[in-house]
Image 1 (cartoon, rainbow, N blue to C red):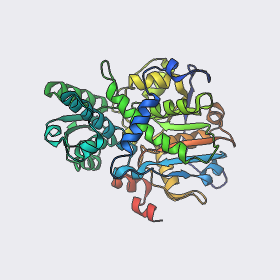
Image 2: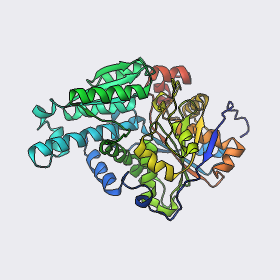
Image 3: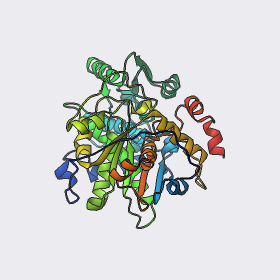
Image 4: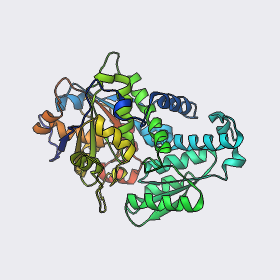
Length: 410
């Protein structure tokens, strides 16, 4: 790593003692979380939406060589449906499934995505309200899905959500409500108002009696995994996936998909969180869901969650090889590395929450003890989901020192 001088990026790693054995099945280890039919239906529905195209899988060979790793594959979600983030395939899909179920119940017949897109049920969908609490990208997805399929959306944000992110959600016609507290408080406010007004919560986290919609969200995320595995070179077997966690829906979907696809040969799942919002890391150490409290004032606002989703946790507790935390500086460094490119690597725009997995990989690869604990070596082939582009361009320029459009132009 000559002439490559990252700042101090302390990585705290906890290797999971409850990891299931290679021969265990997903259904026996974590029943009822995600399944193959759910992933298949989500892929078929989402690929029928206007503007669908697979996002690119980029090879970061220069960075891999610098880190002493065999391969790094970076799934760049910055172009997903024009929303700039992977959440487009989660929240909007759950909105679709809710509307299909509600209309089918009333009509006693199937409701196709084509009919909804064509406005066939617009006179009925305009009277339906969906709502959610968000750090930014999930709320944008729900708002966009509501606009796409013709219903109303009310979106709750917390004190740490930037004005830029609020405006980006409101642009899709949603009513915005800001809660002067943290993410978990906005979740509670959203749930209370939904109960009072008869709205449907479209959340990516679960609680007692509320699991179906978050399961739809996770199945929607599987679209990324299916694309990624199709885009890998033939016979390329990934060894690791470093993946960021908010409430856990994304890593649980990825872990479940990889388990179903590769079975005993599935890659090691490393769940990465900001050190100031480390509910999965703390839960792993405690052996049970454990909340973290306070302002959760991480720069990676999209990951600023203090409580795990119980349904997602039931899978991650069994499927994750390790859990780790990184400081905010690690995310900023990863953003800059992507923007500059390493060697001949293509320059890529990665948002502060979207680079969490890459930040974890870099921090682990340059720390001898973390590297050994995670079994990283020159033969490792690592998957990363770059889950967002510059969803807040002003903040991106402030952190990276260059406008996102200048990076893509280069």
